[in-house]
Amino acid sequence: MTQTAARKQGHTATVIAGCFAVLLAQVAYSLPGALNGTFHQEFQTTGAQLTWVTAAFAIPMVVFELTTGVLGDLFGRKRLLQAGALLTVAGSLVSYVAETVQALWIGQAVAGFGAAILYPISLAMLAAASPSQEARSKAIAVWAGFLSIGAAISPLMGGWLAEQGDWRASYLVVVAAAVVSIVITRFAADSSAPEGRKLDVPGQVTLALGLIAILFAATQGSEAGFARTEIIGAFVLGAALLGAFVVIELRTEVPLLHLGIFANRSYAVVAIATVVGMFAFLATCYSMSIWLGAIQHQSALKIGVLFLFIQGPAFVLVPIVSHLIRNFSPRWVLTAGFSLIAVSGVWCSTFDVHDMDWTRFIAPMLALGVGFALTVGSITAVAINTVPLRLAGMASATTNLLRDFGFALGPVLIAAFAVSRANSDMSAGFGGALGASGLQPPYTDIAGGIANGSGAMAINSMPVVPGAGPDMPPVPMPESLRTLALESLGSAYSLAFLVAALCAAAAAALTLFGLFGPKHDADLSSTNG
Image (tube, rainbow, N blue to C red; front, side, top):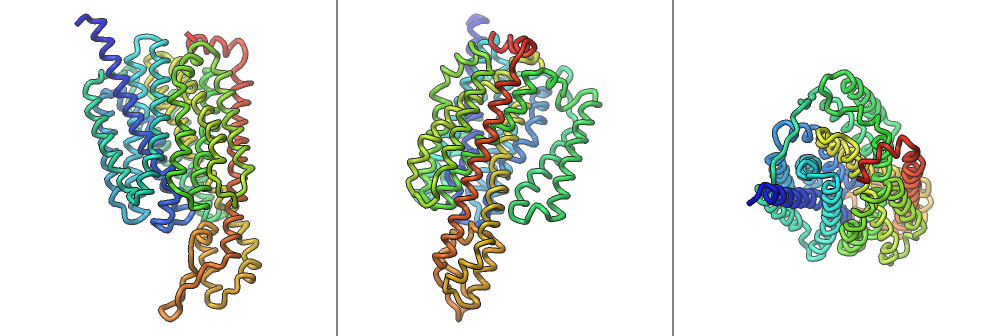
């Protein structure tokens, strides 16, 4: 075999390994998408507890992506990618046997650590193995397509298995996929970039604790109240720690994150748009899942089908997106993509929660999917192609961090907003609805306790008001209370869709007007080849 043929074979094997690894990570991450309603009923969760199912995965994924990027640069990426798959196996097995929502959180968190390796390392391996910018752009487009197909098949698989009465089996499928990923990675080319890289422990600690504090405060504040001392304290602590992280990175000789890459106008603009736009994308996905699953109690399989319309375009459109990335300015591709995400959110905000026709979500979810297809590949291409190759590992890890930080903020912040709004609306109308319910003491006190303690989600989902003891049997939940809870949740999530749309529109405006001018054109000359 000639040297050229060997390099080509090594490149192909690495692309396959990297694409399957990101497929695995996205399958694990997206699995709760169709199962939120199932989890809500299985574990009798509150709104915040349900949010933590997704947040428990997202937080370690976001927090440790930069560190795993450094480890890959220093010690090699191949074995690290296999370690990420092993962590996914461990986390999925814990989720499979979980009997409480707290155990499910633990499984999600362990798998999230695995994803913190799989996302940046797979992308850095592809970038390092590609012999040219054109090859990198093609590989990135395929990588992004596999990311999206993982997000498409995962909720569909979970929804179908939930329909068969065995949602837990979906975690065994993730285990099997992880084993396949480990085997495939054996044939990939190893790579590293140790020059100028070392572990930045102070930076990692302040970044990790800062992000955890902010995400914790946002999640818990939706239920405990944002005015509580511990929630305010967590926000303040998080902001202080992130400020300390910036100071450390500016002063340390070998930083975890070279803040200088943000001096590149294209990179900086796309970085901000990435966080805002990916927040909007996942906030819309999550709101749809909660609307149909936890609020309307519709089939998990129907939600899974809708995720095909969301994620399918990113895989089907791989050749088109690859062509657009190579031949057109990312300014236009990103603006179009974020605009479609905004259209989807506005569209969904017009729906009536009493309308049980789930198919009305198909068109806006398709628009959302095409928007995501246009943005995710372009974001990655700008990040990788506007920095020197020696910084490809850091750039890929940073891009994944920004994208996944937006993803993590999506369900956390939109749920915080919607749950808080729904509970507030229900509290305002609860006295009148309780008076019209016909409930008698002590059932009125019990219903009030449920409303105050667990909120609108619980009132909407509980079929009965429990009795106070063995001599007091449960009674049906009054229709007046259920209607109040349903309408409060519907109004809140309609506003949530609109908030997501406004954020997507802001990201579109940022790329349209921010990626403009002679300096920007010089920055992007390498992106277009």
